[in-house]
Structure formats: structure tokens, C-alpha cells
Image (cartoon, rainbow, N blue to C red):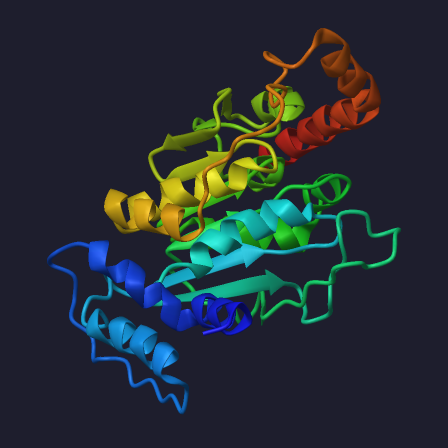
Length: 293
């Protein structure tokens, strides 16, 4: 099998069947996958192996809704989405007000990587397993004061099994009244704004408080996703997903947090984001006032 065909095969939904081998022993049984090939012998061998483990689903079907919006940070969405797509027996919805394409993290720029919603707020399933919100400035600040977005999140948050976010997405959850009294994290320089929204700011890569699961800035999305898979399925399943994605990071520098980055680097970002950080706090204060009625 050539590399291109292998990648196509591995990226298909069927590839997730392999991960089911490490799912819970008492997982619900499913009908064997009916995969038609017409492929060569090597491909058939891979597909036969997938069919062999199709009787294990890893649990009931998961329904995941991921908010998308203009001005979001793409990696905040793509990191968790990559992990969620590695699961079998799941439905993933990219949700927005309408089905119009939304752009990259800066809507004033050319939409280099457009994202098309799959579901509208109106048609989004109820009783979700996962309600997820990505971050991204300036989009986060706009969403924190968007009545339609906040109403959607508040209503879905009442029944979702897990209410979740990555990066400054936690500020949007907070503005919807979903983090009051919960420990939560965010992008490192946005933690003060969380306090204004009734959350308990917690500096950590991933924070779990009851059914609230929040991830830190940007690249924490993969860590967040794996932690959530462990909660939704089990730890071995999450480990299988981690290996499937070959998530074994070795950053070239130890500068991924203000505690380890050189003082000059941290100060540079603090200076650059000073206006945005202040705007986040002021927006959070307005949200707090609105939530108190």
C-alpha cells in the first residue's frame, strides 16, 4: 500500500474502529461494520482487522456540539476536533447561528481557512454529551456580548453532560453564566477576567470541576481532548487515541508558560496584549452586571 492510500484509510471514520479494542470490556455490542472494498490485498487486510474489532463500540453514541464563530482561534477548534474525530460511534456538530462560512481568527483578514457550520443553533440536538466553546480574540469579546450565542449556550448548558472550553472560550462560558462557582482555566493572561465572571481561576493545563472541563491556551486543546475522552470512555481508550495521533510533544523551547519563559518574552506579550486584557476584564464586568440582572 502506498503512503497516500494508507493516510486516506487511516483518516477515515473506519480507522477509529481499531481504537475500540481498548474500550471498556462491558461496552455495548454493535453490528459488524460492512465495509466494501474493491481494494488491493494490503487494504483488505487493514479493513478485515477493523471489522474484527467492530463488535466493541466503546459505549453509547456520543453527541458533541462545537461552537464556531467569526474571530475564533482555529487551533482552539482543530485540536479538540482532531481528538473527537478519533472516537468511534460519535456525532460531531459544528454549530453557528446559520450555515454561512465563518473565517479565521481575524475576520478582517482574508478567510484563509474557512469553516462551514454543519448545524444551526435552532437545529442543534438537545441533551448533548459535550458542549464545547473555542477561544480567540477578538471573537471572544464579541461572543461575550452576543445575546443569541449566550442564550444558546445557557440553554444547552443546562442539560449537557459536559460543558467545556479551550483558551478564552471559558470567558464565553462565564458570560453565559455557566462557570459561576466552578474552578476553570483560560489563556494565561485572561485568568483575571474569569474571576469577574464568578469562576475560580485555576492555573493548569486542564481543569475539571464536576462536569465543567476547561483547557488552557491554544495548544492545550489536545490535552483537553484526551482528558475528556478518558472521562467519556476510559483511560485506555484515551491512551489509544493519543498513540493514534502520535501525540508525543517535544517543544524546542521551555517557554510555553509565563513561569518558564524568559522575563523579556513574558513582558513583551504582556505589553502587546495589555489592551486586549483590559478589554476582557471590562467585558467580563459588563457580563457580570447583566447576569445579576
